[in-house]
Each structure stands twice: as C-alpha cells, then as structure tokens.
Length: 272
Image 1 (cartoon, rainbow, N blue to C red):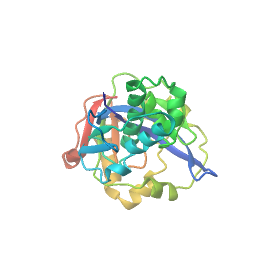
Image 2: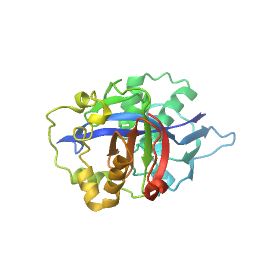
Image 3: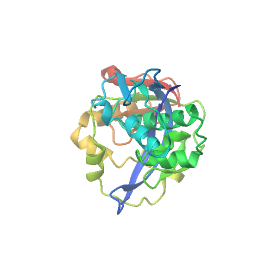
Image 4: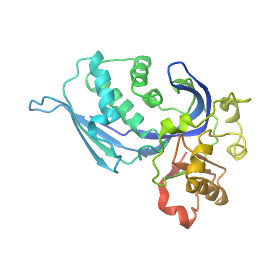
C-alpha cells in the first residue's frame, strides 16, 4: 500500500483562546498544496515481532519510534486488529516547518490501514482517531480547503479563491517549536473572522489576513520576515508565514520571479 501525504499552508492563523485542556483555540484556513511525502507499508511474509519504520529523504531529526506515523499506528491498533507492519516513509516536507508534514503522514497511514484491511471506518471516526494523534491531523483525512476552528479539528470546506493562482514555498531551514510559538502568543478574538476575510481577493489580504505567530518568530529570526518582504517586492498578491513557521509562502497571479538571494530556500512552486 502506497500513499502520498501532502502538505498544507495556513492562510491566516489567529489564536483565539487558551483551553482548560492545555490546548489553544484557533481559527485558520487550511489549504492543501502539492508538496508531498511518500508512504508505503507492507505486511511482511516472514514473522516479525514489532513494527519497522525506515525514514529516508530529508533529515527530520527524530527517531523512528517518535514519528507521528508510529503514534497513528498505535492508535489504530488500540481499536482494530492490525498485524505488524514494515513502513517506508520518504520525506520531502520539512519537519517543524508549519506545513503539517508529520500530521499528514500520520493521517495517510490511518486512511491506508482502513483501506488495506477493509475496516470500512467512516470519515467522522477516522477524524476522531486522527485527533488523538495531533490537532491538525483530522484535516488530512480529507484535505479540502477548509475554515478551521477549535483546536483545528472543526472544519468547514470553503471555495473562495479565484482560479489561476500560483504559490511558492520557501523554507530557510529554521526549526520552530510550535509549543514556544503558542507560549509567546497572546490570545484574542478577531473583530472579523478569517472565514469572512478570506472571501476578499488575495490582493486585499495583506493588512487583514494575519498570522499571530509572525511577531514572535520574526523577532527571533529576522531572516524569516525578510523572506516575506522580498516575496512582496517580487509581486506576490499575498505573503505569509505558514503555521508556526519557518516556511513562508507567496501567492502570485503569474509565474513568480524569486529574488536570487532567497532562491535557495524554494522547496515548492506550483498551482494553488
């Protein structure tokens, strides 16, 4: 069984409150993009007494047993009879980059197990299991452009963006702790929700569609803010950090010409 877990961007991200369970309430737009990993698993012919995970591609800096794929497998096995698996994960989505790569890998494994073993689990239940793995995992069960609230698990599909837009993703290789980003963010209720603001044309988002984590990250890493500024100077309709960073994206209405000084950071370019 093989799957291709895709990345997402956040179009805006507002932290609206701290919850009693230790999580935060947010509102954001999750939007899928074409950058993806590859995930394959087999049930070995010979007997093995534990799951095996091999990770190739870019270095994500964690041990296989700590990978969200293994957490997802554990959650599925708590509820269903799943044999030991041999898993190969090839990474192209950077870790700790604001693109949801680990969550997407985990959700893809959950979906693939459901299909491979004919478990016939409905989408609502799959999302409930995914939420046990991570707050943005439920989105990747059926990754349609969505307005997300709660922890990120309350999803309302949207279809507002005009056709013909292009996106470029740049990652300077800085790993941002999501926990630190939340701890340095003061929650607040937006006057106008992102669900309404995103209905504007992307050229009108610059001063309206905000990411609350940018202030913290830009203060620590001015080079991330510089990428955003250079994308605007290159003609982007809208530029923002995705999630807690450090990936920055630009949305263009034509093929972008990326400034030479940040070209080396480009990790994806394609249609939005």
